[in-house]
Length: 342
Image (cartoon, rainbow, N blue to C red; front, side):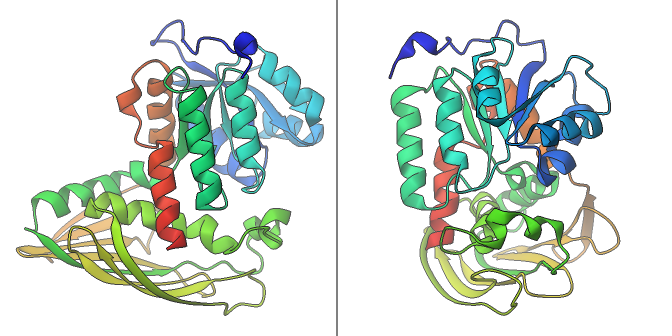
């Protein structure tokens, strides 16, 4: 690797916002990334947006940030990406790009000396993910921070559920996860070309179910030892697999079942963990955004969403030198994907 074009990855002041560029100007960048950045200008400042189409980048600058940074620059196309990555003003890039092309952009950004926060999953397959992870550790770590965005690890409700399972219900031994998450034909995320015709096996299921594996690994504090699953395709408008029933045993001895589908018409999200001294039930709220936790069938706690904002803050802290602040390492992302592929 030619190191002449790579800076030292050091930020000038841990008390100043991290100067970032967004790579990708699609739905998730507009609906999640831009709002999270706007809410926390003390941690992250967006100074540029890039998209394959110049018009898309300009639209996100105008609509997603609503003039909050008059100096923000929109870049488009290959030449625009080259210029952005050469800019000394950009310390880090946050990317939400098609899954099958994102690994290439991760490598390009790291080679340009930028910290990287890329969207989950880390790659389309475990084999590709492992190559990417090994290249990062061989050539860029610890000088540069690379995190793989998994907001479930930072959701306040999931962090609280982890505490309950570890401290308040005795030794966990059984779990059940029931997820119905409707992806109807009019879902705007299904209109993106890479989701309509995915180039990797598993399609939407790989992209979406990785959230669940990250959550289970965190809450149960263990890796899967064995997985036995039956999958099927139930909806004509969804590419590849959309439904699964599975039995899972973790290395800790916890065992349980997973039933999930994206071919449904209504939402349900419930994870119940049974321990020797009680239970923890985590549910998506039906009467508003967020989660509800029931401990031992009587204590009820409610939490709003906050994972994307929290992971951005941790990423910024890690880029400033606090490497231990971030939970979204490439290693964790590889393990999340390994459980999906299993």
